[in-house]
Length: 438
Image (cartoon, rainbow, N blue to C red):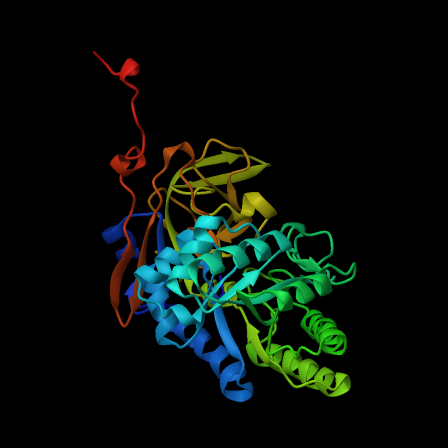
């Protein structure tokens, strides 16, 4: 397993993160356990700020869907990033954490009237409008509130990034955004400019997730700037802000070759600047929305090994006390991960095994064919780069409680999400009187 962030092997031969022995963390907090490396998280935020904000005066907005709780909100705020939320629940979390409302960007392809009303009353900075239905709804709701909603229109640029089918979003056949090619996008711009309670601030797009080919971003920026030029020629409106989304890929396993944040910034900004000059329009303020590339490398999940099943000549399965309930990504889209035995990280590999989860599903497999030291029940398995989407997508299938999360830094571990109890699993269940035990 490749070590990242503050990971190191300590004198005991154990994996250490943030100065904390992961074997000790497993013993104190139990497993499965999400471990978040604070220095790693903050360092990547600062890399984005350095590469985009300080160099180009661009704005960096953290995509909350990848990992969000009160502590994460506070760190994002302290590092000076904006916050991209996609639901009333994410918005509520941000407000509960005291995140500045003016730096909140409200996304989503089917925001409810209640969610829009909540965001209007909170005074969020931008509404990222996804479709004409939402645009008309927002116009009415803002009028009732006596407010002017500041919006950016999400467009579909027709760019198919080379990534998994389920995490592509920029192609024309997508549930997201107004399509440029068929005229929907221009229709949306012109309608917005006519409205009384909505103010058009700019344009937005997002082409997908886990993207390694930086040329995809360059081409997307060119398409969006060409459209901004058309908007100016047809309406006289100068696009003030251009949000080019996120999606920068990260290293999960051997073969992944992500680009650097600095290269990402350079290729995006170069395309925007060149196209602005070519189209004869002012350079808009550029916004980017990293999520996975910040939270992903900062997260590690710890498990305890239990049952071991050896099928001679076929496969050796080692089972952990978690699985698709705390990390559904392998089952959803064949995501790959690296791992080590945290209590034997200094030992050489001795066998090839496949790591199975404990859910009652044949597809509940976390890692296929990984080399590990001789595995035994009670060993602690550490799976790296699990900060993005694992906690966010976690569930209670088989009535498994969701894991706890700790923030580690300088040898200190702070609990930032409690482990669910069995009692909490049934707290929303109701027993009809006719079924109550007499």
